[in-house]
Length: 103
Image (tube, rainbow, N blue to C red; front, side, top):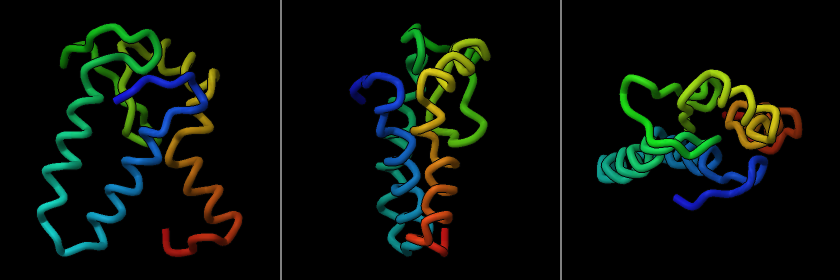
């Protein structure tokens, strides 16, 4: 997982497409790859890059793809550009443009 400036993070979109492909597939072999990818992003706060433990880990309630050490970091990252990255926003944009009506 490479870090990108807020507003340019591909993690939420990548997880969205991984999860979507898995949901539409009967191939159970993809699930371990998705779980491994998700576990790798649980280790650091997406805003301040502090190490996360199960006690201080907060997940984005919209995309469920990025983690924060506090609600303050989540709010700061949202304002700094995560809103643009967030899968929920992606789905809304895709529906609004009519590109994918089955999402």
